[in-house]
Image 1 (cartoon, rainbow, N blue to C red):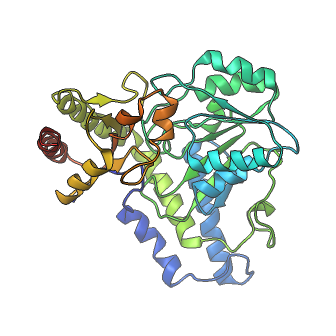
Image 2: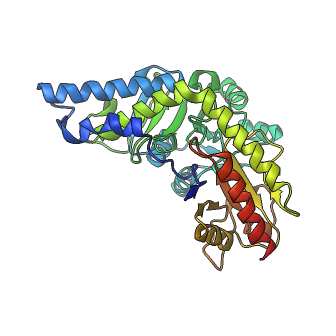
Length: 369
């Protein structure tokens, strides 16, 4: 199979699996236990915390391990003060959008920050948000569909000047572009393990020292009392190892992915009428979302699957479709074109030969639709 869906999840790195196995087989103690078996496991968790912290330029005490990016996003939004307003960008992941809508139903005012045709926030959209003085603003660093990167550091500076807290969902950016919590200037940042060749079921919320965080789960005191429950030790260890590898191999990974993306887009440019969404924006080196007028994205996805190629649909609709992707809709893409969208997200093990094969198969399918 040619796997081109790395923004959905990545295969676990063999070195990550090797680091995890002892904590699935031999070191099974509860990390809250005081005897040696528990102390060994506790030490492994803290080592992983150091590894994740190093990847995003923070101290280990600023990292709270969670069950994944979704829980971390929910935890971040739950930190909003009572009755305070909230603002999010129009292209947020559902794990930000849905908690935001829930907060709205609980009485919090919710503002949506619009994006332009390239999926990037218009700087002029920020001043009205500042005037509304929300308690928290959430702007994702890189979009999971288009790969478009936001200037979060610039906006965070503006919001900080006005005593407004800022959260960024950095799940897709992690391990693909340089990432520093301190340079971004945000108060909260969400991470996920399985997007960087680590295991599923583990993520983290990074928080500024002294910032009050309201726990979603109580009853155990783990994670500085901010996330109760016995830790998912093996996955945390795996996340730590994946973070270490992402930090040491970032430059070569980025170079490889950008080279493949350049080849991919050169091939796509040979297909008449094909559109690359957010092409003029700064994007992740591995992500290309395309639309083909007259095509059905999910049908195209299934035809590619029959040929052994895995991509994802840019449309949230089921076959026979209701609504197109909210991200593309926010960008002003016409519904029929949005429903034709597919996303190609490359990974470190992909090859030039796979890119050429994909282009060949895509040309044959679009040519015979």
